[in-house]
Image (tube, rainbow, N blue to C red; front, side, top):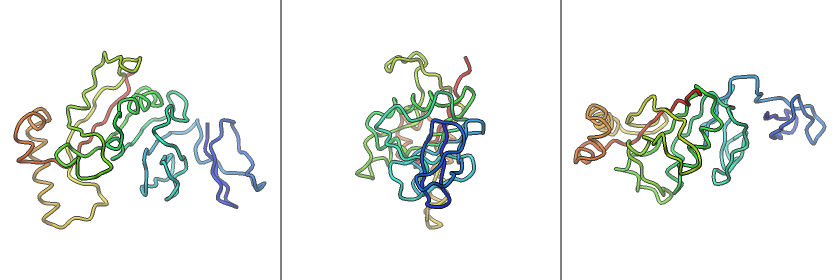
Length: 217
């Protein structure tokens, strides 16, 4: 499986055949992604287009995604054990059933590979009309014996924490300081306290980040 582009007309396409293919304009295409390299997947990339060994996947090709795919259509167009690292930032809150998507990430991640998921915390989750799912940190503690989707969870939590803001967010000094303070105390108190007690209202953490590692058989 590889993604190739044409320098002449800008055409991009996904190929299952190995080797460089010819574009519809007749030009020999360049391979952007090859199975013999490190592979990183940026899911729901939007404007966050990453270079190098990254595949930028999005539902629309507005900003230069090199793989256009709707996450409502599973499975994803990749083989098992393809990626070393998957980033899914502020995407899963737009789906009522995110668990099948997480399991699909597990399928296409190599053993020992990592999946990083970022979502808004439940304290601010309903601020957008597009958000369909509320998350708290305990949401991501997947049951290893969960067979609701026909398989056990192969994912182990490496890191689970709150964070204040994305690097590209434009915030005032007061806004950044307030978020930093809330996030500091949220991480200090821990996910259990922040999920089940009134402290989640005192220190409303803005975002949650979880990093899974795919278990080796």
